[in-house]
Length: 160
Image 1 (tube, one colour):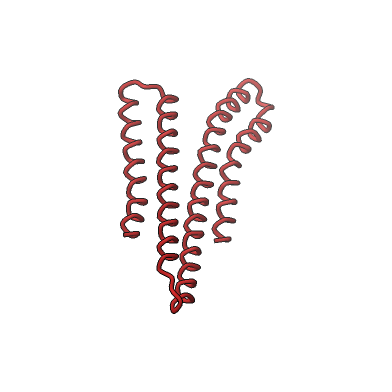
Image 2 (cartoon, one colour):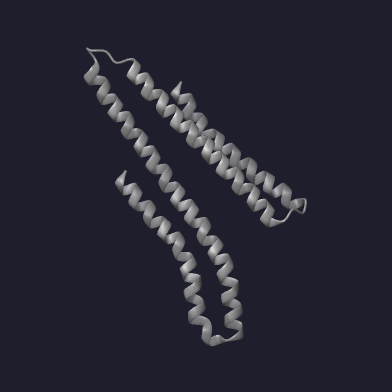
């Protein structure tokens, strides 16, 4: 049964992300503003993320309860090892989820920062060519947010 639930945990977010992309494209064709589409997709993404996390924790808790209910005196050592292995698998899964979230959210933040900073840097450089160095620093600061996310993600993956 847990294999079916794990398959659902993988399939449902994939379908939801595909539907969000389709909905955004359709809304764009109907003339809806980009900010409104972004807010709607961000809200949908967070909702799918919360549902997936809740489902993961529910499955993990159900497996832990099932393991506790089946313990007896003769197989206590063997089941303790299985529980320890399941806890290790859960921590690895949560570590991978954390690494993905760190990279994704840092990439989104870096993209937003560069989207705001790059046009301002171009405008400042066109008005005063001497300000190119200062403008380049602000754009690089926005890009460094994404790099920090990748570094933290690598640290998480090495820990798991």
